Length: 178
Image 1 (tube, rainbow, N blue to C red):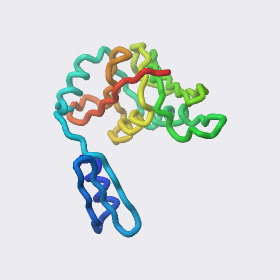
Image 2: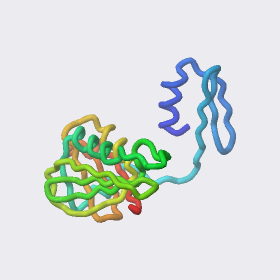
Image 3: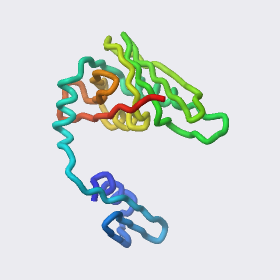
């Protein structure tokens, strides 16, 4: 069982339930709800080694107050499309690192945009397309202040960590910003 699913199971089903396991999925249900997740088999890279390698290859880093940065990502992605189909944080975001600030640009499915900025102490300039939901999750999960954001080129991962702490890191992979 994937660790994320296991943690959710414990919180959602404290009394347990009926479990069905097949080659492709698992399903846990009780009288009021059902939870289903996919089983994924394969050889996966050692996450800690990949993330530490990304930190070493990052050309730039900056420090931000998480409440400022997370707030800016949420505000930038708060736009709704005129047809009402888009809701919540947009997957399609550009994190644009500039001298003294980070600009966050979000674009919805109709091409409408929202943006906001967050102060930072960095000076490396590059724009990296990312999944906005993953950025918020990475920054919120650190529960420290300030957080350090390490980054390289537009196709390198963005690393979030507690300042100077390589034991507690989050990595967000880049994507093409359309």
